[in-house]
Image (cartoon, rainbow, N blue to C red; front, side, top):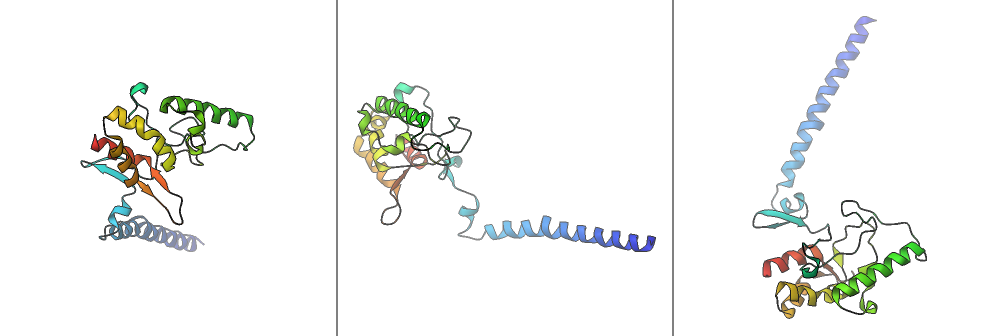
Length: 193
């Protein structure tokens, strides 16, 4: 009986050691090595935006920038977050006729119209409705165009230059919806300024 238990314990210990070496060391090293194959390395490192050797953001995550001086706001803004907390993600479960949601949309529309110096009716829907994740970097070209005059005025860039940068950071088209990535656009504006 003792001999059987000892034999089973040693077999279990051998299995644990082999599994640890294979799954805890060899497999991660193999995957890391594969990720270093030319052509795959950029994808393996994620969606980092690197400027002057320093990661400044992610092309897949949009964090709405907060200007030091709201009166001189040089940034393109993302869609609002339903959580209201920039460090939290997620949408709301409110239906389209929920009074709290409708009130939030009206507040956002008024605030954006004031910031961009336009009539509330000119504010596009994606500017006032939250994305499902709360960290979507993409906005509609209409929302980017609405923000272009303010960004040009504050940064000192010509409006045509800002519109060119918007066009360069716009993707989609035939099948996919046309969107502007605010993270890459803000980096481009910063570098041009």
